[in-house]
Image (cartoon, rainbow, N blue to C red; front, top):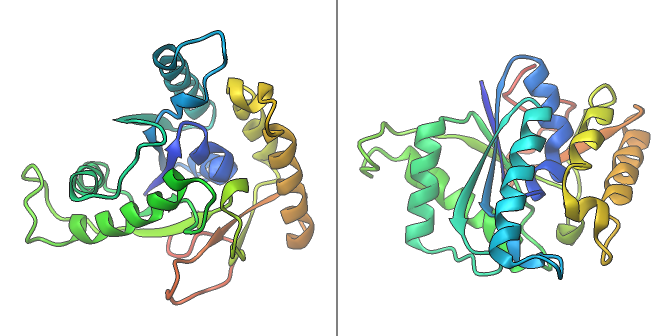
Length: 233
């Protein structure tokens, strides 16, 4: 089976569900991290936006390899993402190529506009990829399920439905995250400390050492559990 974790910027997908992805990769499933933008405009003062874009794409590839997956970064610009037909069609076409069983993405409420647009794009692309009436590069229709995961910028109204034990995967997850410059060096937010603490807190609630969580789309038939529903280990 194939798990795709789709984020707005390089780093989002991994911090949100990197340990979950690693758990499924270890079980033999295919894992792909898709980044709609590189997140290049948060560049350090001593590097240009374009050079930081290249750096972040390289970091994403290294992180994905550690977690047992691959990385794809699309060419949209950071902080300029739009949910238009061209973007939806591009993502739907990519989903037909990748054929994921499940896609994990941002929650619908966020203080970052790029983040908030991701679930809208994923849901619209889900329909377009699945309907045979759309001709997308001659690729056959493909329908996937999707879930939301946790990001510190997307927490308004986020109440977890699924707690996944990632105790055995968490050290590798933290090792992977440490390869992103912004996670280890940001002066505006303590990313590494936050996600280590979040995994600990979710693990406390789950009665495991560490956990990461997922949330069903609004209006979906919610089924609580400890694995991705319909995506068995």
